[in-house]
Length: 186
Image 1 (cartoon, rainbow, N blue to C red):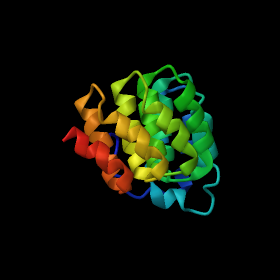
Image 2: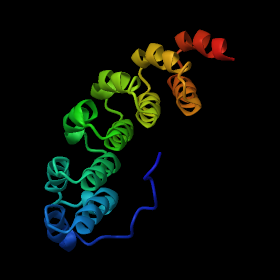
Image 3: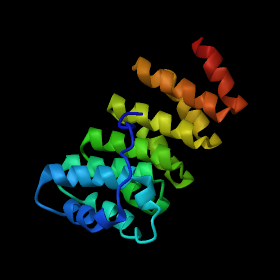
């Protein structure tokens, strides 16, 4: 998925207070950069004093700057901590920005938390192609059978990209009940 770039090198734990402070700071580029570093520096996240990182990123989801929100969303997906799942689900259902909703669907797919399945199924019917694509990808990544029927419907989506994502997701799930729909589109 988009945004899965190279992870940064080692970040010293001593940098944690500055990074956490930068997320709430006035400088937009520092806020985005801090969220990205916090989400990608796995050795920092696993350090003993990092209990503040996920709550800070969850708080950053409320930032009015969509760029900061997207950086925090990506960071939460990269970290893999389920603490932010309910906040991400809330954004998936309510955010007006389709780019934010797409990022949320991708993060929920990376987190692979089954609690997100009903909301990702709903997002698979979003008006925006990028959100439908990300939701189909995320449902496949989670791999739960309850997504088979909604993904089968996406095989007839107007977007070729969404159709491919739905077919791939059905393959990842591997449930035979999706086979007739796959054969039908062949």
